[in-house]
Image (tube, rainbow, N blue to C red):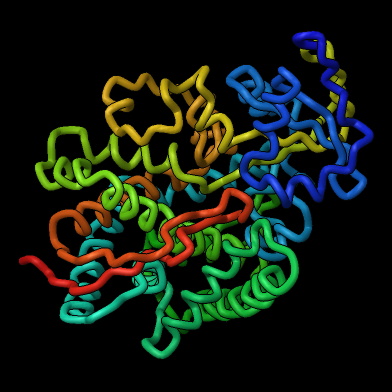
Length: 419
């Protein structure tokens, strides 16, 4: 109990309709309303504990108390994550698979990714020059698909680009979807996994030789805790877990472009390349704009915390968006201000846009550095190498829609590449 309000006040209330109504703000709205950082409710008839705050995040990433296996709903596994991927593993199996991903994210590989990103921006911007109108989200999604595949060691024929980019985007877009958006995501997942299975088969039959150290090579020849190669299906899922998140960075890039449009002083600062400012801008885009709404885990064994009993097997959801906008953590959280990160003391349990805890051993995203590097390269290119006009359009984004995006998908006109 906190402030006289019982934390179990919603335990008999089916909250699925309200989740669709409130979207990103579902957890924080109820925490604020009831004066608590923890409450119990139900989704699709299943008991769920929702929580927020630094203490809650530290608890959530305690691997002795929580497991990831079985936490992601099947509908998300069948669209966004794929089944039996790293996100749903625990203990030794998770650590070994995580080390596989970290071996791909070594500095020389990340630097290569940055160079590939810059090169693709140059190639695409040259094509855009002189165009009257361009929907930036659609074009950047194709650009990022080419970056991801080239970096991962996955051949991508020109005629495939639009389909593969669209499918990878649909898997992400299905995250909080019902109806047609969800089924489009499932169909996209099916096509993409077939594509990746064929790729793994070609590598293992020695008919295709990707660069040693690339994601395709590393994943195809990775052995599990039983000393066996990953199954073709699991290897396909994990290769998509490299490519899909890079394509998903498109959303952050568009929000970064929106921030530069709404705050012209930020664009000027990016042009001046003040030391540290690019990183500050990238982090503020990741904090301010909606991307991941919340993350889930299941209780490994029953325990008592804050006078509340966490029963074994219970699904627990940690608020991500709400923590990024919590006034107890951030001064003026609803104000876009990159300078707040100028003297930021990193805390892996407070700023968790891609998960919290230790990225080497826990469930914090192994590709977080990749996200930041690709964002930095892309936003610097937009600020310094591309001139364009932003016409009148609907740049609003809905917090009910998960994931969300400016409704116009950011239209630009009169594009000019600056040498």
